[in-house]
Length: 385
Image 1 (cartoon, one colour):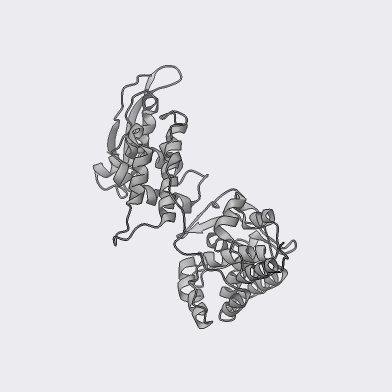
Image 2 (cartoon, rainbow, N blue to C red):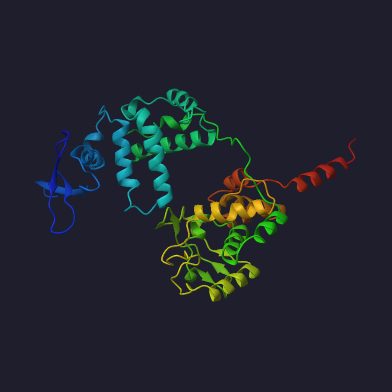
């Protein structure tokens, strides 16, 4: 196959129905050694009103077409082209190994931070110390310094981008310069957790539907994307188990965050009783109905952000709780209560459905103040020589 660069050709094509589409055309050698024409649809003219926008969208395809050439030594590949190829091959809606939430977040970080600063830089020209210096200087739109946790996420996504180049053989093995970039992931604030009395106080302020949401999250550690994607068919009342089959993010139903996230969750008997009572009460009780279907249509589940802002947080205020409450607060609380109950770290990891125990202990679990005080008092009672 010829190793010269193919820019390809872009044309607008009329369809029998629907808007016109942009088509990308190129040539390649088939298995018989014959040069043949290929065509791929980039998108509609509604998605890309101008030819310039269509060319930009086709850049990932163009990188794929020139894959063999990109493997040649000394071939300069700009970071912007690597991003386009990665988005097209790994972050498109056709891929199944990332959830919709992960694809959305990755695309945002790539377009918001990495592409503007590094898009014109050649792949082989990125240096570790230059990336460290760049990360230290990142700021928000209001001029304040970007949080270390956000910088760490940017570094990790940048590293994933270089691993993609290595996997495509556009970069030599072991040549990921982001591997040695030093960037703290220290939080500015310790995540809030709730004591048992505070959870009960919030539950007392909620109507049955929303009380059940909080009960499920605080007794299972379920993520909000998983909670609002539950159907009645996912609940096995006989075995007291919930199967996690899907997630929802910004109204889009997709895969779970990770393979580990799909593990079944044990269901508390009392929560199961409340869940059964809700099934007997709600109009949406068929097996394929959403457990928390929106009361307006029933076709879609509630939006987590709306429920949090209009229902959960006001209930916490009425209960006299001044802590900043989010959906993840209940997940952090679940992890803390498990540890306080003396559960084995591996058990806590499995119940939280984390890929490794480090995430469970370092990011999610805090020792309760009463437990620390008891341990400190026990230590003072030890007779030292």
